[in-house]
Image (cartoon, rainbow, N blue to C red; front, side, top):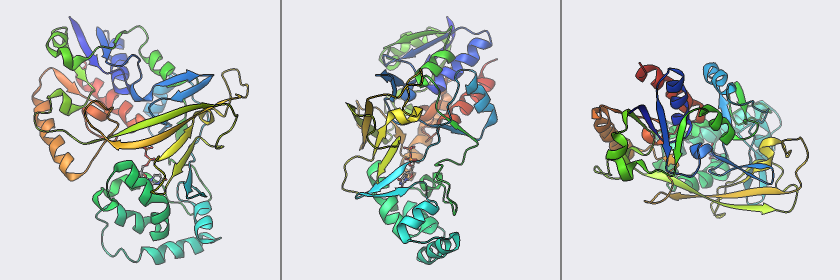
Length: 370
Ligand code: UDP
């Protein structure tokens, strides 16, 4: 009998497993996929760490979390600075002086501020949805060219039906600073995320390609406590209905050229281009292999967003009112499961970033492990 059965070898599961193991507990980690690291999994293709489940850029303001991850990886100096491609015109992201200059020809911060102030006048009360929030932050021109199409492709919903908080993730700056994140610490683990998670799981028993829900009773009998990081609605066999998720599909290609787009991420912000962005993985590590040599080839992934249906991988919870209410109902059921703890993006139905997942796993471990 294990002290803990951890369902899911992603960040939440790996951090909890590490903490439990270090506290002297017996731990078994299972995952239905053939690899560890969940959606932060990276695969080595021709010396390039390919982010198989989409771009992951580690960033945090939380010193405890930053110090914690340093135990398992060294981080490089990568700074996320995506480029937006709107019908062939390129703009700097997030919204900063380079963006405003390209959009309006303004040169000084004062001119940019005046332009935004003029355009935000159409919003007269507290923004009630993403469209109003976006216009009130940066004005209608930027909303139309850089936000509307991308957001509607990513979420499959009208910007008026999406919560305002999603767009607040993006900084707006009247300076020439195109760092996408307002985080004190940022970087990519050298050697890939998979290696980092493997390091977290070192000395811990892991069984891959094991589907907990298919054989739930048998697995439950093996441990005193279960840490479940899969979708909360799936755990309860969808008895109250299915929560909505967005899924993502990638078309990945190895190209025989050294440089396809000159940046790790290019967002396609018009409505017509079917993909939301193209990731060129080598630029997360400055185009070099482990020995520091320039890589002759490149791997790109076109990212397509879709509504989740059974059988797809869930990626993003859809935090609108309807799904929030359904999640709250599942949460009530979850609280009654005495020997099970729900955690992570899917277990808590939250649009967590990696650092938030790690913080939450550390807190959970503190609370649960006696
Ligand atoms: N966003 C946008 N245009 C962009 C990039 C982001 O409007 O070019 C908005 C959009 O509403 C999106 C949110 O910012 O849903 C978060 O996007 P991001 O790409 O940062 O999310 P991730 O997929 O990386 O978590």
